[in-house]
Length: 251
Image (cartoon, rainbow, N blue to C red; front, side, top):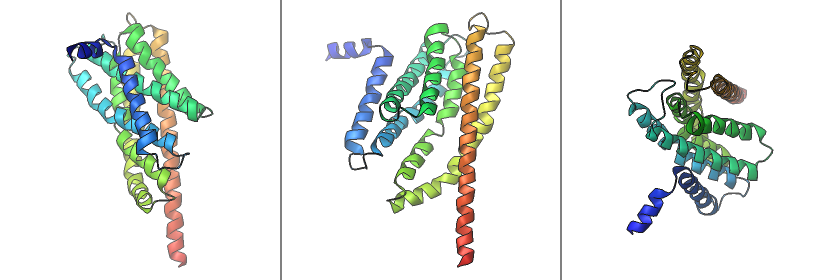
């Protein structure tokens, strides 16, 4: 027993986390969602690993940030922060494999995951600084994940399940509102503070300028795409409400 425990603790975090996400994905695909339509099972399994990553990542990242008394935009990564970065890298690698296998033409998500992995991996293994900024952004990105995954699963089944249709309709407005606040206001505000700090030159001795500029570009692009996505969802919701209102009046 002690030898087995010693072997587990000696395994690096990244492959261990990746194996865990792979296991969750396989259980979801072959057991939990085995009765779903074949075309829906991959997306449902992806939501399962996102459930396993999103909310835990929020608490882990928050704890890692608060446990560092010397935190700043260019502070050295702590071991705890490195562990959280490994946890998220493993998730994005697993979800990237999912997209490459089932949705290889979805270049937007594949590009998003590759860009995110570039930021996480360079922060974790190349410069070993800046995890505070990356983890705050991780919290902002994942704080809506539980609601988003529930909404995504409901959307997938709304055409053949009355419960799913009602859940989708119930979740849409609050989910869109929370997502809009986080991605439309909190995210850009923090990114601006991050940019100002880096632009001052405070991080130049530990994070090369080309690297933090590339981080900013990735973050800005991700936020812009997120804002466009939720804007289109609001427009679609407004259209649906307008159509329902028109149908009621015509009756």
